[in-house]
Length: 335
Image (cartoon, rainbow, N blue to C red; front, side, top):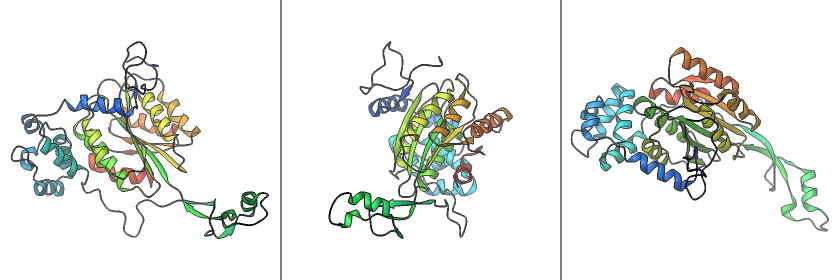
């Protein structure tokens, strides 16, 4: 990987001048092409049986996924269930693959604390062109009337409280081998974020290695199946350019007009070939946005790197060392 290469994909989805592979894949056709290429590398039933503990118990026959067996495994060992579904979601068999993805998107993610909202709402006073506010905004009303000789209903502007939305970009480290716990954690984190969305919230998903891929541009679409499909189809690999990932996430989050803007990084925080990621993390404050970090590794170097990134980005760090820690980690960081 050569640090400092250029940004986005041409709208045609082709290569930039010089024939180099694009380092930021954002054009929808180019993203679809990349995912189709990645999806060709799927796992056979024999590979799943040999490499995934518990697989044979939940899929006793080709093309089948026993939902009751998955539920039983999830009750006994929810992390094992997440791993099995993440592995089966990349199977050659289309029926098995679809069933695993559907179940992965619906794995139990815990319940809010009793008597406490899962995410506290935020609100602010705004001026609106309607008569439902608590106070008349005289300046805005007079400005709307202007030089017109008669009052009309649309001139009236009032001030009142309005809930504000949240925009979140999930930034997934897809370097090296993205499988097992890492993939399961990404799927459960995405599902947790989607399930917490309120009207007006937006979610985007970016994956990165030496390339950054916009898997889902910021959208208020509450469906999790599209996100799960794209995460499961993706094959990353290679080096870790954290700076590129953070810049790509920043470009996405800057497009939102939400009052609360967050980038949620899922990584071990250790760049292998990258310009200084701390500068890119600190730059989020100028949007303004915050960087929250889900640390995938318990190793001291990884935790130190993740903590430094979160501090630079004005956020916090939480451990995500097992897939099923995702819901509580998301709640800890985002409230």
